[in-house]
Amino acid sequence: MVGAVAVTSIQKTCVAGVCLLCSGLPTVAGVLPDDRADALYHSYDGGGVEITGPSVLVLKNVTQNLALSGNYYVDSISSASIDVVTTASPYTEKRTEYSLGADYMHGNSIMTMAYTNSEEDDYEANTASFGISMDMFGNMTTVSMGYARGRDVVGNNNDPDFSEDVDRQNYLVGLTQVITRDLLMEVNYEAITDEGFLNNPYRSVRYLDPTSSLGYSYEAEVYPNTRTSNALAVRSLYFLPYRASIFTEYRFFDDTWGIRAHNVELGYIHPLSSGWLFEGRYRYYTQNSADFYSDLFPRQNSQNFLARDKELSTFNSNTLGFSVSYDFIQNGWRWVDRGSVNLSYDHIWFKYDDFRDLRDTSAPVGNEPLYKFSADVAQLFISIWF
Image (cartoon, rainbow, N blue to C red):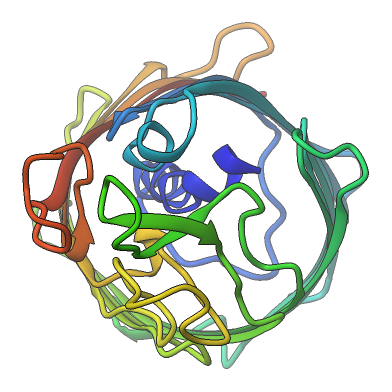
């Protein structure tokens, strides 16, 4: 659970890299995915956290109207992050995820069902999802809707009797529109409701304590047991006259915990006739803190809800990244229709406005240096179409 909570935003960054490498094109209804197999190795290194592991994905059309997919994904996590080194000992853990999915095509519509199971020592997540997308108006418009239900069980390695449940629901609606011959636009709205044990059983907050030699002491975090989040994203893809393209994204997020976040991204994709595809991108993210967050509380039990998770603080990040793809099989070879090798790399700078680095014990309490760090995210994967 420590690792699962700490790397949530990291994993999202890794997933975003895969999506961008696949050129970020909106989903098209009425067309089943091609038969395909991917083998991926991913790596994250930053802020005292290292995450590595493989992933294998297989997509296969079993009939003219039905496609099945399966995915195996592993995170091997080693953490000596600032949260860990200031309140606990470094740790290692492993998260394993299995996913099964099915796409069924009927006319201009595709219905998708999927089930995912994720397990680690102290956390298990099970999610079932259903979605439908439909092409309309001569395939110029695609409308999509989706729903997912998750049931998680939170454990604690320090207490074998500890077990808490989390119930998650996700709702998604989207619209993709061909604006001109060269311009695609996509708008997505997502709502998420979480209910249950939503904080980390290992994490603590600090409060002023004149009786402590440090000047402060620790107590356990306490979160609300409900959270509702809303996100609106607008994306565009513009094709340039020389076969290249530009993509943009703006995403706004808010929730009932008081967090407001903005994400802006700009990228450029340039293909070459020799089978190479290059991409460069920049992303900026900023958010304010949750209503019940504080780096240092004035006293013990000073309010009903308490948090000192840096992911709930005020911070921003800047990301520079690139991707390179090469089709090493372009015209087919035996049973392989196409093959490509892909490399993606992102460097991320995180800067926190109200989360302090407690490793500097010489600074006055409450005036320690503000925390910042950088991270490297890399992915290497091979895709085979057959």
